[in-house]
Image (tube, rainbow, N blue to C red):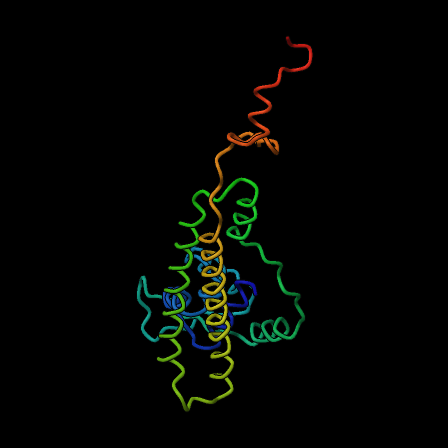
Length: 210
């Protein structure tokens, strides 16, 4: 998904000012397609220049009044064409997984703390998603729009559930790691102190000794 299509989607759901749009991104679309406020305002200007959206006329023009935007037919057509086109899944690029791979060769110092931090963040996000689900999708709301929006939210819930399970499993695996033994020279069989072979070795002279 690209930012202009996210904005077109949001404006088709509800015409909004730039400020309202940034707030809606923070509370909904931003959970799966994040953007800074500056990026949103820049994209609004581009969409308006492209003829995809327009600023609604104000009944009472006033200096500094927020412009409210709506989607024009060309913008709806652009979003329709984009939504119907195919797109392959994006390859995963997660720094935490790379750090785990690196830990396999350089050691796990600091890894446990980072895993626990991520686990707390994913648990908090899952709690947020469940709260949204309870508030916005109570039993009985069964329109097609509601079902599709609920499926998007369910995708986020399932993703957070996966990460919580994987992180919990990873922390358990780290806890089960055996402690490293001190670095010592390996003793040859029969050379351990107190064994007959060791005593015999001390009593016998090396070849060439008298």
